[in-house]
Image (cartoon, rainbow, N blue to C red; front, side, top):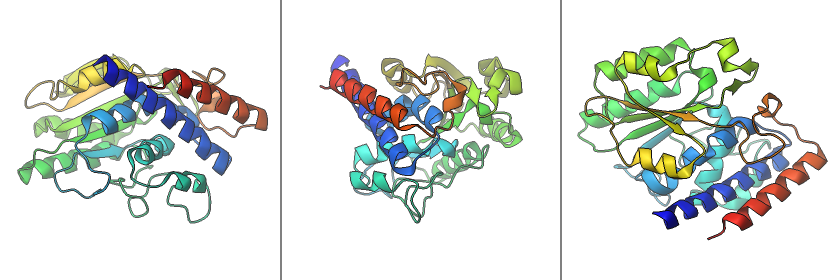
Length: 279
């Protein structure tokens, strides 16, 4: 287990570097949320999901939906690392006609299950997919990551109620709870704390973890579903822009247009992290 955790930490370090590579290409990007949820996506794609990069439409695959579509650089980095597309394509981020636009597009890139970006829709899509898979007799599961800033959208709570009512226990949601959204602290804009109690009151099985701790993410995902007959949600407490010393926990890095000096510092820090995490 210890060796597996170290390998996943090494993969996460490489994926963080890929995110900054895309920022260099495009000149800007939604860095903060991409880095806060990246450890979650790393564990999903390199430990938990049943998927085949060489056969993206493998019928019995697990599905993943990035509801917070603006965090797509995290998804692109793990898909690239897993072998869904060649690394050179990362350098097209932000370019006209790219297959890696600012929100994921299922028609342009393998491994994308749904177009997302209009916040509040991903959980509904995921719940529908999970119910459909169950009706088809499939053992596949559906995972989704939501941002804490998108939780106030009413469509989320319709999906939360419906998933519990229909006992969709092959549905697993992560809340990337970094405490910040584009216009400020989530608790000041629309306070939904305690998030765990809200989900429990709707009939979900709930776990709280440190969403930037690979070992904790692995541990919680090895015990699914948390309760038979209930959808599972993981409240993942994370740090905005995790992995960059000068940016962590700062609202100004929700969307990042770096100076030359900042970009170079980010690349140095992440190159050092890759060396430190090498296995």
